[in-house]
Image (cartoon, one colour):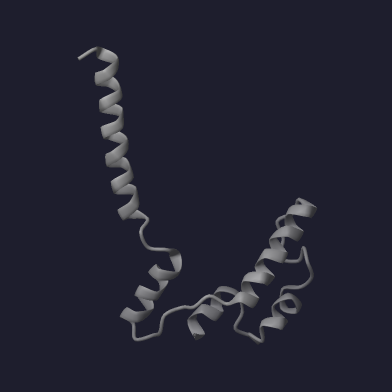
Length: 98
């Protein structure tokens, strides 16, 4: 077998192993990992909240447009979270209340 063919075969084998290990290491999403922790402590699974996701996306776009990483880029945190009706439980803290 020519040296180049051996090197390519070795590289492909290494990449295959890397992909196998990467898939198992990253199989669970952050929400699934949080849910597993919660379930282990007598709580319910977290669920996605479309309103909070929309608010977060709007905030991210505002920060990008202003080139400024800030909680206030699109207004106060409290006023931005108000449409979610999360009250005092907002953002990542809302995950614990579901």
